[in-house]
Picture 1 (cartoon, rainbow, N blue to C red):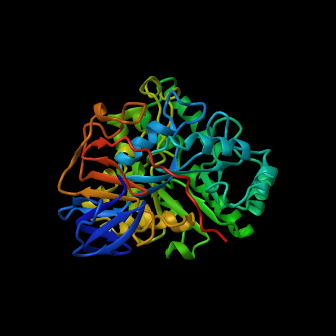
Picture 2 (cartoon, helix red, strand yellow):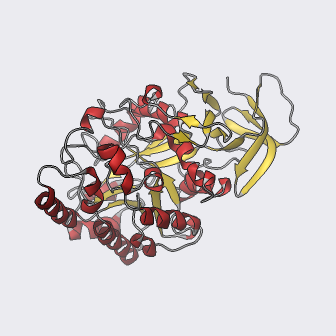
Picture 3 (spheres, one colour):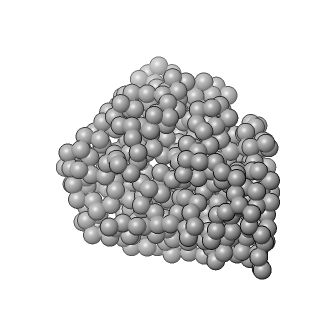
Length: 445
């Protein structure tokens, strides 16, 4: 069934909240107007004043396929994503094998076809030895080029200055970076071992993956982008000091943009005392002052996007000592309800949150006909109920790893329904079983 009439909606879109009805046909938004009546073959859903908004476009996930499917896979994690209000995602290249060739990239797209509940695209990964592959890639073959300018898996750490300069100069795609300075991290780790021995506490993670390590690497990335006139997007920013690297203003007018992730907006370093290695992630969760600066940067339009960096690990991989515990959190299933904390605490309005989660990712990555509720655009929508809290527990997890750092918490809203390409995929806490995800297309010159 692909014909819907959403009645009595509070539509959050393009800086406004309006009362209206929305007609969906053939996967697209056909009409946005008050007073619409149900037509032949249509199913009406009464929003009853609940928010309707474009689904979140998550520009940073790790769905673990291929090679790490004991943790998650495209099918399982995309189901969790639509439950959390995510209708499109972009998946990272640090898999096994890594996605550092055009052939590996094509294989990932073939794996997603017919299995992804949400829409999808994939990053090409940079390494110290694949500059020829990067030069050859076409603009529509990947969402962007991912460069790990910090610790990574396999051979994906790019730490040779001449290679970095070549990537920034010659990439036909926007460059997207993970910025942490590895020598600084190694020095901090040695100091932690000397101080704590084998009993390094989880809270030391923010000292090891320090503000200094982030700032040094982000400064390098921004400098290279300015030198080579490269379109740059810096992922998961975490520190107050980094905010000075970014200019306020509309995302469409920027050469260099930045992103912050939900867990860095929600948790602070004091939460390590309760959650320990469960919130160990790279870059690390830092102080309340850093979180305040990140939130202010969203308000000031220095930071342009909100993402998840969803990175599931088995619970067994998060236990044990600090040194052996894996870094990364499963986040997509509660993405929008957790992000709504920014609205509940009056950091952002609903309109501004939608801008950061849907409009700006579509603009920055030049997605075609997505990210906005417009007549003729694909119907990627969510219905959000801000009168009903989401009570989180591990039993309801759809991510294959089976746990969440939000367990035991009450989030200030609930995703009541999700449509992907006009298909209802999630409603009232249940998946519908429809798998309509499509390969994302771009409107690039």
